[in-house]
Image 1: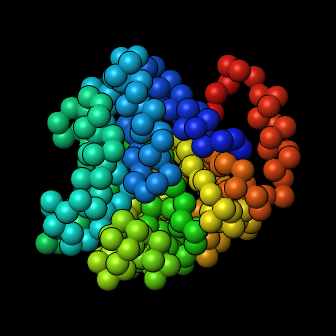
Image 2: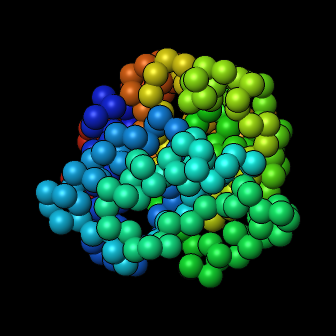
Length: 260
């Protein structure tokens, strides 16, 4: 696992660099897209590169991590609409190239199985963007999630609903109780994981992710078992890291050609 500590704007540039390098070398790459605050600067940078530098996603595909269950199709916080607003409509993904779990399906288990199969049929995810919750969840794999889990329905914790209430007019009663989410094993099947975290509120989760024991209590710790995982954090999110000095030293001496 590589840990990079830098200002938020630099983190976004590094993540965008990795995505651009992938898409330019493999135009039909499969990307994994996350919602939440963490990837927004990355999406801004990718949209800028598309507009100013001709970075094209026309042949690429993308899969979303998760979706709320039961939100109307036109709800602004339905994750399919959030992804459309934040990145898909700002670049040139082909119609239908961005897919997400169907939180309005009549048969949710069948919809989850179909989503898993769609990822497999696409050849798997080349690069997965991730954020992390204050309780250590990635996607909506809440504490206690099976480390071998696949796409399924999950009940959101009170902490997650409180954290997400800011997107629902600060009214927790408007936050759904259930979601569909890629499982931890699904996420671990991606070839490169790139997680971004900023702010002191994420410091304990980042500490557990990188330096704690692998445990279902902190689901993101499964990333320690991945052969190509990158963790991009700012100073505040890195404030609990015991090896912060080593991480800085390692990145500062890294060859320019290596990338993330």
